[in-house]
Image 1 (tube, rainbow over the protein chains, first blue to last red):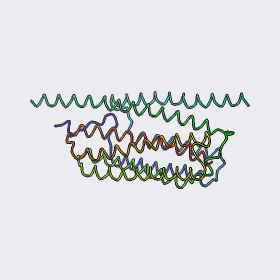
Image 2 (cartoon, rainbow over the protein chains, first blue to last red; image 1 turned 180 degrees about the horizontal axis):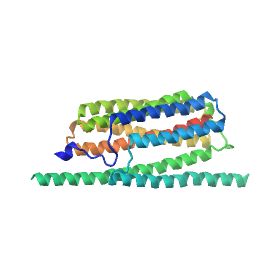
Image 3 (cartoon, chains in turn orange, yellow; image 1 turned 120 degrees about the vertical axis):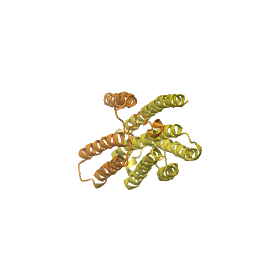
Image 4 (cartoon, rainbow over the protein chains, first blue to last red; image 1 turned 180 degrees about the vertical axis):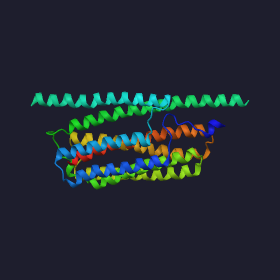
Length: 110
Length: 198
């Protein structure tokens, strides 16, 4: 009976309304910063570029921590984080490897 | 008797744990699918590639509204999970319906956008740029549509599945999937729409 009341979280952490609300507000603000920076066009292009990517990465982290509740508190949580990091490495190799090769080809064929 | 039952329950919990981990691995592999589509999109949109620019066709305000619908759907799904922890099934269903409606608005807006783009001349068969755009954003939209169908099934299942651990496990799958789609969307609107409009 005890186990029924205390349901497992499958390594996804404890959920509370306050954490969700903080996550929601942070996501809304970061989205508005991204869109605002591009729509207002007050900054030079390269600075806007840095702003939108920084805010995307922060929003990504906010979603992972506040909504997905990725954590290393339990054994399952650790496995999740490990596979998450591994995926990140593969993803990095794929995307940056592709861009590197293609820009190199572009340069050499010019 | 009581001891047997708790052992059985413990067994369920352990197999549920590994099932959820398996689903998590599926999501990770889906991330790799999206990363390849992103890489293709960026390569085909490098300076010097042919075809019309997406810039001339998109309205950022429209994309912003789409973004907020998806975020709201994700947040409301979180509220449903909170109510599930307190075993209020009727409330869970209500929140899921709201989450479904927000998601439906997102898919509807995206479809309308695609139809507008196509009718204004930014068609998927016109250039590499357009093809990669429709493949990337379309794959995300397809995932969201499947997710919506799944939410609908979940709402129906909730009314007759009484075993808490089964409901909890299925809601965890769906929650992970729904959240993952919102995370992918962050990168879609940044890489595709915002960089495209710069």
